[in-house]
Length: 330
Image: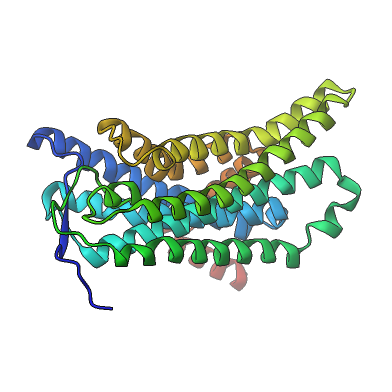
């Protein structure tokens, strides 16, 4: 099919303020991005290095941290270049950005659903937990999440290639997202909107239903417990996951599931910042503060590294070697 697209690039005008404000935003988002990378990498390293954390719950948490790194890396680097570099993004680059936003965002939704099911199994079916949440099943859940998300992303992005963009080419946002791009098409986008609504509702709805059903069962089980301490411990175990779910689903649904014809300007940017930039930053903070095992593992890792560097400081290493040599001679 002949490519009828006349627009070869788009202009991202999100956060187009005066230079002092742009400088402040540049440093703010740079710090957020670096903290996101370091925080999520710390979670992954801690889980991998600590044998006590080799369980399904932390297996999914490790994948969630990896997804948060990927998710924020899709938009933030381009956002940073927009402040002092070119605000242009090529047509193919825009389509690719939409694809990876869909891929990483949808996979994260499924991972959150898998984590909810894991908590349900651990709390409501503890006697069968090991048999149900075995490593093969956990890997199958993660692999299925990536496969379904890839198919969903391809369905919604390949259909964009059939649209004609003949101008304007200005996107009042800091990244390419489907609602913003559909609003610029010179062709009727009703089929694209219907396709997106049906696929997004099916996938997001199914993952959210799993989370909702899991927590209804969890709450029902917890309320039947006689020990107040047991109730508190169970709720505290699930609270971090619930906070992440609310942050991710709440802002994402408001941004993508409302009519594309309505533009809320700065409000859209705020919601996009929340689920694509702030949530990947907050996830490791929430889990490290609310999950005792992760908090203790991080403390041990930091303490070990500090002790190691103290023991091998330059100069002391030679003195230690001389002392050990003298002792050996004696």
